[in-house]
Image (cartoon, rainbow, N blue to C red):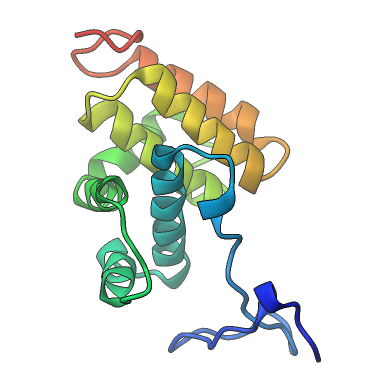
Length: 175
């Protein structure tokens, strides 16, 4: 079986199995050449690490540490901040998401990519001083690129409610 140069099969990690016989693991599109800002690229890298950790049911720090140990990978400081921030505040973030979603659609039922995007955005909204509009629009842009057709509307509603109910803050990002 031949693969284009940008889709060379990657070795499976310990415990990984192909979803179907004959499936191969390939790297995701390198966003270094894409039209995204540096902060968007950092968020995408953080999303990759959080998604991997969620998929493998491991601590997000393990995914981050793997990247930090790879001499060919550069990890931006903002990426590190997001991954560690989501990890360190995971319980509060998941409780917050749970309070914003219906009991028929708990966090466990959310598509994995949406769950990771929601966690990142809630971290930024509740635990950083980032502009509300920037946090939400970045999450929605990544959802539009990487998730289902319904994800943007779902996350927009969830994050809009989160912005309106941020503890001790106004929805416009002002203190």
